[in-house]
Length: 338
Image 1: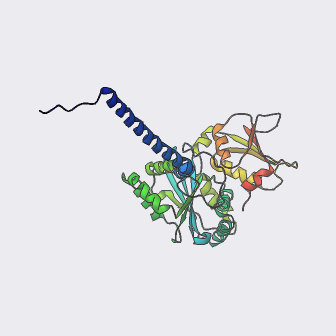
Image 2: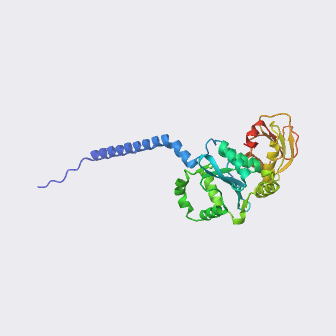
Image 3: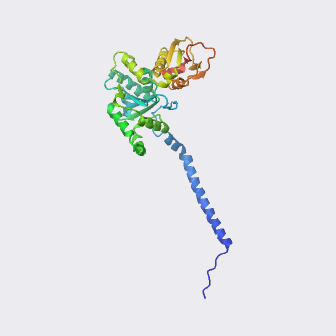
């Protein structure tokens, strides 16, 4: 006689299920702890990797203003070899008004005197020195830099036209990670991941033709202060938002160093602002101050990409125009050539 299989009581079955659930929860908790421990150990490195996928130039820890493509944006491109041997420089400029991309090639292989000065600044002070040299000599705001290690002796128009064509490909976004791996040992930049995506997107959709690539005139004895160079720069880097806002400035040099007021004047006029007057003060101030009579937020924001300052009200100061910039001793590190 075959007896039916005896089933365990319901309470035993329930007990086994509870034990099983406890084991699953225990293993799940262990996995969570392992993941959490890894994040605690590697988290800062991962966040840094996500935020800054490429290394900055050595010694460049300067705080930078937020990248805003609603204003004219200028990128400094640096072509260099090992041991900081500078090959060439270019500026890529994006104007949001007409979504136009422009390139200014410095042609250092042809401008030997400029090449010598630029190489000295780059070798002694790296990207920071080179950026100050370019910005202060031409009066051009530099928002970000991209320094590429390369054995090519110079930038040429065909390179930029080819890069623009590749960026317009719908497959470019699938190549981002492989490109990142290839470029990591070769590229230095102060751009974050967010910045690079903005740059990629704007350049990809910008209007750009061969006529938008310009060459710095061959320099004479006057160097970068030559009439042709000043005319080219003042037209090329005009910011339409600044121009339309119509901000006017008085600049008072209280830094204790001659010439800084004129350097800032060149920056502001190239952007499209009006400089009513440049004054010199015998009294030296330690800090740079901005006194505001009439709010001009666009010009104020662009001013922040040139110098750091503390903002004040009118506070009894007498000046012409909408704003007064009082240059303090702290501005010498930003407005002095390296």
